[in-house]
Length: 237
Image (cartoon, rainbow, N blue to C red):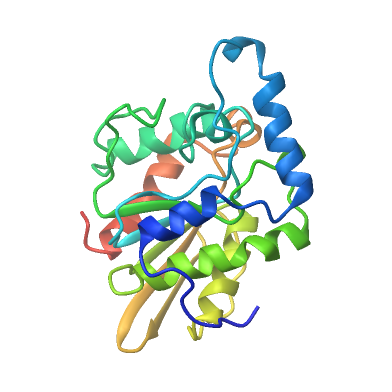
């Protein structure tokens, strides 16, 4: 998708537009169904049931990119990587390396803060089986590209959680004119490059999903190492 210029002039305006989005009928139906049927453990809670905006600094030095909101995580709480085991892993790691204020992220009003870091995602609505279609990915791309432009003055490092996030991140950066060397996704895979006189780093990490954490494919030291590397490059640590 070719970048056609800024859509929204601030993170606040962009977030409001994201929350109101109804572009993808399948995702709208699914996110609202989950919010109505609910999981038994959360049957007394009011689900968010809408698209989820990014979270963290509006002038970040580091951007973390995930896949999409979890059906009973961010789709319930309204904050990305919040209220599920993936979030426990991510925020726990960010806290250990000195980025997150507290080691957990349970709700939008829990007091969590991130130091010079922002978390975003390729697709803003919870998809069935955590698998958005190519059309849904492309429909959501302008939001992510707009977010990249808004944080461009400060961001210097990127962490892609999973191959889907890796592909969307690189495609979107290229849409902004970044000439990125070829690189294959893998845990710890890194691409360093320059653009308009600034140096950038893209680092890959296995997604902190239960499929990866329960099997030991991703360990806490592995996740800490990737996030610390990106944070040090961006001079946050």
